[in-house]
Length: 83
Image (spheres, rainbow, N blue to C red):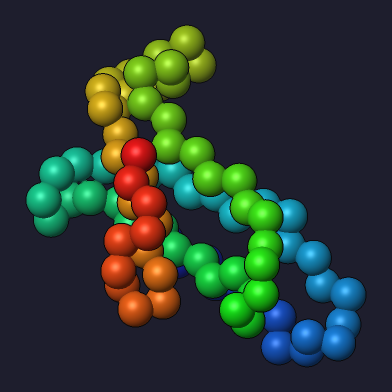
């Protein structure tokens, strides 16, 4: 189990975060994986988000998720996108 947080407190600086990723055991109900991040301060941004499942077997992952679900929520918790 781990927690990693990255903060850029000086918006005038040249800090660029290129990648944030996680890997962990994912289950159902109380054992789901929740990953989160905040993009900017309300302006438009381009992000790449992936949810992988069965294709991971070719990389040697045993028992991958058979039908992963990805949900995106706004700052108020409302569902914005579901895949």
